[in-house]
Image (cartoon, rainbow, N blue to C red):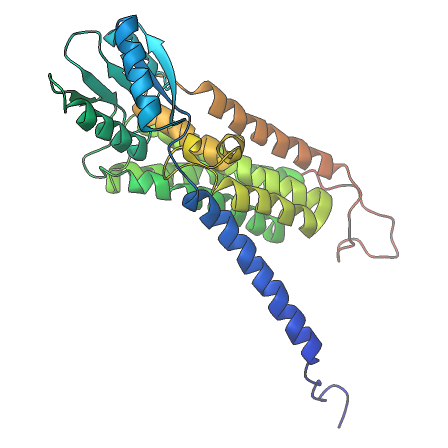
Length: 338
């Protein structure tokens, strides 16, 4: 029997054992990355405002600390108008207003349904005394998606969509400029499509369609260009590192299902520095609020610039491998810019 038709021997059992150990480790990392933030999330250091006279606000602040120790980061404001402004600018998640004589709790479900529900519980506690505390939602979620499930679930497609684009463009397209233009074009088309689905079909978004689509396009572009640049410079290892940071850290630490402040320790703050967390915060601000744009927009633009710089640097780096268009007997071809 010729060597071409010879049956290969089965793999050694040590290889099987090694594969099992490696796969089990990968599974453990995935479970830890996604389950740990969710299982350890809690109400802590949530920014809220308390409006009213000094004596009343001090009393409520002490009561909140007793009810939920460390649960809130409280800012004292003068009146209802100041509390509403702070909420609309995304400086706080809600407020307890004691300035009018009639206690009321101001919430913003669009900022975080979980935090809004917590504040409603506080309103119920305040209502045990007279007069009863009213609840007013300044930024309600759309009637078609009152729990905000569609927007929370949208964080994962933004990540996977950016990763998919990087893989497809890396394997199918040659030339740095063509890859970059392909990534940007895909980001625009993908942002328009994703925003249309969430806003017009599922009813998960309010606000201006073009602005919502722009945020999603910016997120897709930041992710795909960063991964493209890393792969171009460092090969599969660079892509793997970037994907691990954005997927294994960025998605579970985005705070999309709760609030970044509810995640354990430093993880929420870290998540806001990565594309998924910044994208969710920015689309909330654009779709439902009057402010809170600056930080997440800066984060996404920084990742986009980082990806463009990596891609540009890769265009001037000698090729890592030879291709059929550059035979081994010929001098190395110039980098493919276009």
